[in-house]
Amino acid sequence: MENIADVINAQIETIFKDKGYRPCTTPDGKILVVDQDFTTHYKLDISFNNSDFSCIVLRRKNGSLGDLKNFNVPWTSGKEIREFLQYLISME
Picture 1 (cartoon, helix red, strand yellow):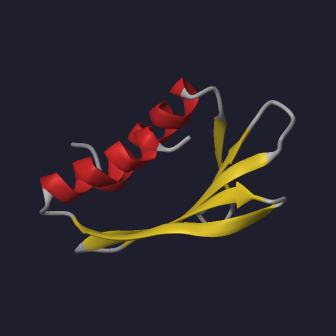
Picture 2 (cartoon, rainbow, N blue to C red):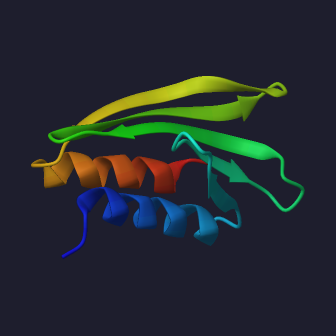
């Protein structure tokens, strides 16, 4: 059986690879989305616990990363998980 956090991480990876980026994790579990020159375009400050996950999405603007959107998604809400993933797909 798959761990739900692993499923979410795999979906995030697929979304950004489809956009032409390379998602990488830091030792503390953050996700950096970089291009071929290792310029960070997005950072997902994501944390998982027993009942939900939270994610702060940061995007590069004017040379630095800035807060874009915050999520707090319960594991039991398929709708909110889909909305989170759809948001990532819609980002430019």
